[in-house]
Image 1 (cartoon, rainbow, N blue to C red):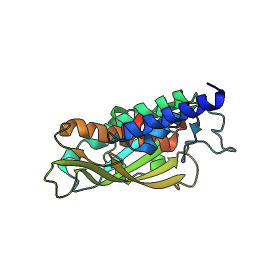
Image 2 (cartoon, rainbow, N blue to C red; image 1 turned 180 degrees about the vertical axis):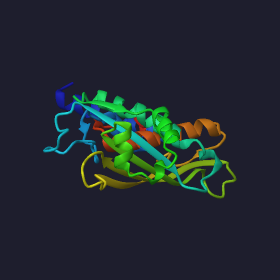
Image 3 (cartoon, rainbow, N blue to C red; image 1 turned 30 degrees about the vertical axis):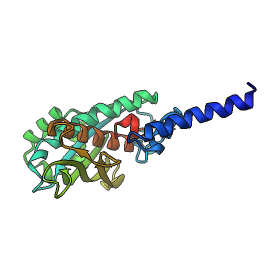
Length: 236
């Protein structure tokens, strides 16, 4: 068999695999992305970088404080999501930095440290993000506001999972001088991204864990360079 014919049959085999997997419910685009994906590094849209002419420009360790808050009136299932999400982001961000061989060390303050600060400062909500960051010894503060969260599709009587959340992230560089946000962005989050899931397939606690895990990944990737990925790799 000549090279042209071999290449032709190889391409047919690959695309045959794509459509075979698509036939059992996976998106052809996701399957194709999985097969043809390269190890390209994707730049973070909102990187935690210091001003080039600032006093911290040569600092090789970046300390980040996370301040997640849940909108009043949120469903009872989300009573503990603030700390759960922060813990997962704190794990994800350094892992992404390690995967892409970032030369800087990324340190995320634990929620235990943040909670201790809150207990010692009962009026912390009235403090500026800059003041909070300085007291915590952080270089950046991420305020994460969560609202309109749900795990189930409306009207499904809790029989169909369709996770949703509206997120607002505000980034502050501590000691920047003006106290204004370095960046601010909305994030409309959905899980699973490609559809819904029967509530019979997995317990509510397991689905909630997956929901929070994927939300943490989305937020972490906004701030740390990462490898190109796809829906299959993310379990989305």
